[in-house]
Length: 224
Image 1 (cartoon, helix red, strand yellow):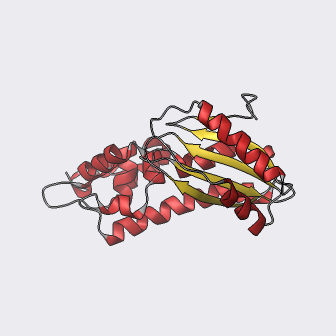
Image 2: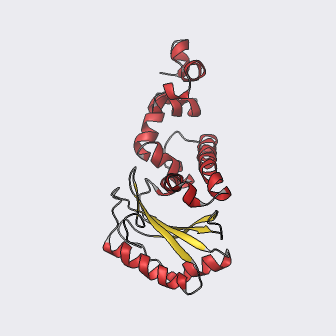
Image 3: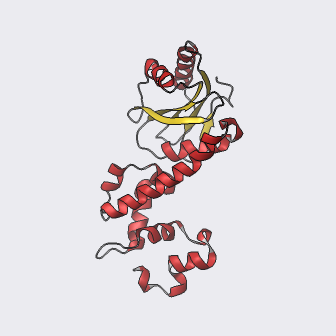
């Protein structure tokens, strides 16, 4: 079924304009953005497949260009539009973190990291570099590993902090399994990095573990 085949009041665009975006299902929202499907496969089927392969909007927002290239029916124009929407969402969440101390909005920090790291099929270790007022300077993906292990080099994290003149950092990594529970290895890595960064007078404020729909703060757990 195409969008034109639907009654006017059931088409996503008209429905959104009349009732608001919250009235649309996930598939309808994505279909509205995609606009067209493929011969023999309508836009709703394409939207369903995209959401299923990415694990919902969370995974879609974390997808890279190469991830989208593997999905049949997403040509350059559709991929570009999706990537643009994802980047707008990331920048919208990052903006207040750049303008005020991260401690003013801890849930926004978690949402920001979930947007970047949640749903990835591989483990990524990232660092939020902060200025002297604990405002966000940059989120930098430092290391990428396999599904079960990431090699993190303290000297690279220290170098990154010094290059940006950071006063503090928030460490973050994802668990591709979806379970956001810190491991003993996570605790050991945190203490190793904390000691290395202390040598250049950079504080580790937190280490966040990103799972599927959940982010755990090691500082809140008393593990720093």
